[in-house]
Length: 66
Image (tube, rainbow, N blue to C red; front, side, top):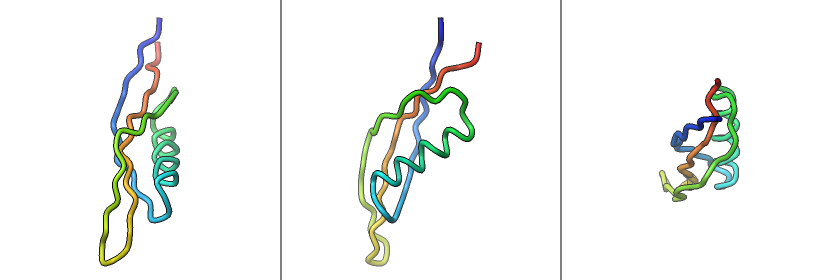
């Protein structure tokens, strides 16, 4: 039997949604062992001083150690 946990992350990028998601999963994988998937919960664009910042809220699933 395995048990998984889900945690929500907010990721940003000035490049694209895909870049924000990739950076979020890569960063989560540095801290969390057993990352198995990520689900994109929400995407939005923030505008700061005329510049666009892409934001993605993702749910990262990881399997807990035995």
